[in-house]
Amino acid sequence: MATEKIAVTRATFDEVILPVYAPAQFVPVKGKGSRVWDQQGKEYIDFSGGIAVTALGHCHPALVEALKTQGEILWHTSNVFTNEPALRLASKLIAATFADRVFFANSGAEANEAAFKLARYYASKRHSPYKSKIIAFHNGFHGRTLFTVSVGGQPKYSDGFGPKPADIVHVPFNDLDAVKAVIDDHTCAIVVEPIQGEGGVLPATVEFMQGLRKLCDENQALLVLDEVQCGMGRSGKLFAYEYYGIKPDILTTAKALGGGFPVSAMLTTHEIAAVMAPGVHGTTYGGNPLACAVAEAALDIINTPAVLEGVESRRQQLVSALNAIDDRLDVFQVIRGKGLLIGAALKPQYAGKARDILNAAAAEGVMVLNAGPNVVRFAPSLVIEPRDIEEGMARFAHALERVVAVSL
Picture 1 (tube, rainbow, N blue to C red):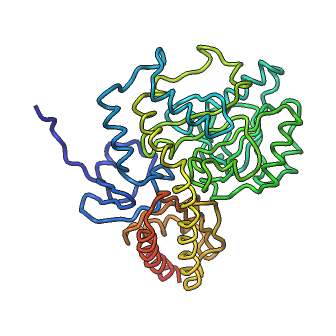
Picture 2 (picture 1 turned 45 degrees about the horizontal axis):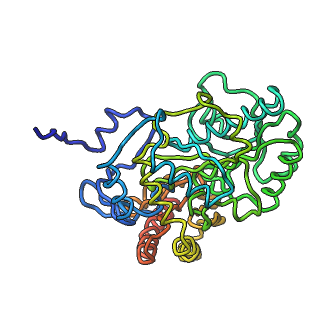
Picture 3 (picture 1 turned 180 degrees about the horizontal axis):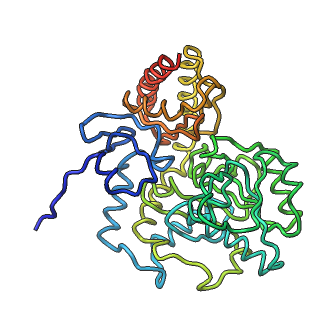
């Protein structure tokens, strides 16, 4: 007997979904490459990438094939057993990075939760139970669990949920002196995004990242890099730490790792991993064969010279188009970021208008993001076609013209 499909619209969202999101007024129903179609058949060019997730576009043939093939073999085993896709994916991540050990989970928040727990557990086992201070940064974002949202430096996301985990200190991003002022023997970790994503698409400086590595070494603290958004080729390197001439102690990745299938990973070294034992941490779905099969296919494609080198040329095309628009409309204060994680910060006269621009862009048939109220964010597919960039930026220019006209 066929399962009955009920008719749903954008209005259904307001009736059935917990009101923690304010989604666009159209409902995407189909995607191919960097194009998306809604319920009415209207086409959009996707510069949002599902918030830096669909790094190979929508329904990439290799990912679809991996999902179909694995879907007919083995879906789930739990962590009472291991499985081949998880072991292959872990081996490939280790071969491509500083790491020796991998822990799989389902989301960036879960990978970060595991990273922060590991940092504290390692410090308590190797040093002292009082070595628990975590230093993090204003406007950082690390997820929505109570621990990760507390480490994140945006109180608006953590206020109102009762007592927060203790011993977390926030200082200004890219300010090494501020870190020096608070780091001490009780510090177990410094947690940082090499490129702050939700905080406005702000890259760390080389001096800052190298300084953090030195401070961690001097204070027997771990350097934890959150590359949930900027990792997996987004910056033009497989992981952004490669730009800085340093190695982290722990790194987290998610979003683009599965190209749209929920999967995340925490990477670390033998020495740090050695404190863990069966039962200390875990997750039912982490390392799921379906997720790992898709992620392996995504990694095989992203971690190639063709894709990684292509990120820079696509960035240049996007930034050139944004500069041309700005020459005409004078709306951007600065265009920043790395690779295909781009933030266009609005001039003071357009402060708070990022969401209006996002909505105007949707009306013109192009999907963009904001990073706070004053930054328009672009995180398209790493393999987006140049013609899609050209056409999408033309649509974006029309959207900006409308916003400027209303603002004058």
